[in-house]
Structures are given as C-alpha cells and as structure tokens.
Image 1 (cartoon, rainbow, N blue to C red):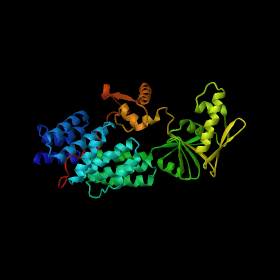
Image 2: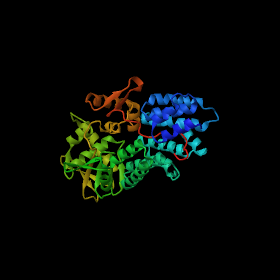
Image 3: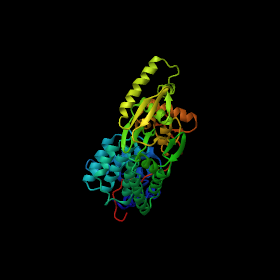
Length: 406
C-alpha cells in the first residue's frame, strides 16, 4: 500500500472524506477507486459511490479476494443506508467469510454488523441473534465495537430487554466518544433517544397516557392481562399469545378490553371486527364462530362470557385489563415509524420490513404524501420516500484495512 493510499485510508477511518480525496482524487487504480467510493458515500453521493466501488471490484485481480470482499462490504452498507433491503445477502456472507479467513477482523466484523442490522430492519430477530451470539468484539477497532454494541442494543430493544439495551448503548457511547467519529457519535445518540421516546399509550377505562419502553417492559411483566395493539399479542404473567395473523380475533379482543369490566353489544363487535354496516343473521353466526375461536385462543388467560346484549371479557387471575396502543392513532403509523429514521425508503423496502404487499404500502404512501407528511425523492425505480431531508452518511465505512496507529 503506497503512502497516498495509506494517508487516504487513515483519513476515511477518522471520518474525514475531504482529506482522503485530496490524496486520491486523480487516481484510477483499484485501491484509489475503492477509497474514492467510500469518500463519496461518506459525503452522501451514494449513486456515485456505488459506481466507483463496482469499478474497483472489477479492477482488483482474481488473487485479490480480500480487496474485492471489502468492496462488497462497502456496497452492502450503501444498500442498507439506501434502504435497498432486497440487496442479495449471499455476497455479503461471502465477503464476511473471506475477510475473517484472511484475518481482516475489523471488516469481517463490520460485514457481520451489516447483516445483523438488515435482519433487524426486516424483523428476523432469531437470525440476527444467531449471528451475534458467537461474536467476540474485544479485539475490534473502536468503530466496529460501537457498531457491535448498537446491534446488541437493537436486538434487546426489540425483545423489550431495556436494561440490556441501555447498558449496550452506554458502552457504544463510550467507544464512539473515544473514536471521535462525529457520524458514529450521532448514530449512537440517535439510538439512545429511542429509550426516552414514548413507544406506546396505556389505555385504562378510556384514559390514556404515554409509556416509554422500560414502562412497557415492566407492564408486560406484571400480573395484568395486557392487550398489546402494538404487536397484536395478548399476555399475562410472562405468557404470550400472538394474534398477529388473526386480525379479526384481535379486533374482537381489543374491543372487549376497551369496554372491560363491562360488556360490548353485538352490534358494536360486528362493526369493529367485520366493519358490517347492515347486520343480518350470517354476521351474527360468524360472530359466534369467531368468539368461540377467541375463547379457545385465550384459554388459561381469560374467558368470554355472553351477556344479554353482547359479550364481556373475564380475565383469569388478573386484577386488571390493560390496553396498549401505538403512540399515535395515525392510520399509517407503521409506515411513518419506519420513515422516522430520516433515511430514504423505497416502497419495496417498506413492504419487506412491514411484511405487507407493495401495493398496500404504496396506497399508504399516497395518502401520507397527499397529507404532506411524506415527500418523494428521485424518479421511476429510483424513487424513494422520506419524512426529513436526506441526512449525512451515518456510519463509517471500513473498507481500508486497520492501519497501525489508526
């Protein structure tokens, strides 16, 4: 590695792309193309960065597998920041294996972090946990250690292990402060703000108050019967029943919880669960069937008793019935929640992260755009949606190898 490439790599490791470009802006050899691609990514020109990295990967010879693997890792991070969640995972897995086999632990760890972060975005927590469980970050550079702690915190937050998440974020903050990389410090601070942001609303007897994540964790560990409209689950004393794929049953459970300890008229249940405007005998028959299914699902947690006018929820052993609702009644709150990270999302990436059809997501985006809550950037297949202006590139790409003294 010649002196200019070394100097550019050191500048990029500090998060200083302008100094790096001063060393390599006029060079077109493979290492310079790769470093220029990283510099352009850190400056926010992702399209140019992707082009340069692909040129660099082609320019490296067949014996330079490590260099090509670093290019793949950098391109994968660009895809992640661009919210191109459909970017194939196999090239990143290949790059991680090559880097770890050749002793480039910093970039191998970064490749693993990118894979974990992608899995978190699309909700595949079990796979993310398997990737992280045999991962030992002690010998990694500061930026990689901070990224590792962010991944640990992300999994813990989604599992509602808030004490674990807070500890991981504190470790990430210390490491990022020591690294003195502004973009990394900003990313850690943004992740820490999640813990102080209202994550749900507690609704009891028609009264609502906001809850933070640690409040939600404590509530779910209590002996109350909790109807969780954020995740579509019902839980009590650590036992959880998921109704995520049973929207009619969950609508019935939520309506019964809202009226507890009273009952709900049959007409109200039909209107909420089936959206029936004109009720006939077929609707009443279907309601009886669905109530029977819900009774079976809730066996051991609660019963459903018939009353003169309708049905009432009867918790088993719980003193209280609590409804957890999303922090906003916004019709398309889940789409807005993903867009709230400030990144530009494609409709296909939103559909993948939400587990919904692309057409459903597109309808939601159209409504939000008409209301002025979402803005589009780009055209055609390159069109993306976001709630805020495009931010700077949030993380430091680790394409250059760890350098002595860097």
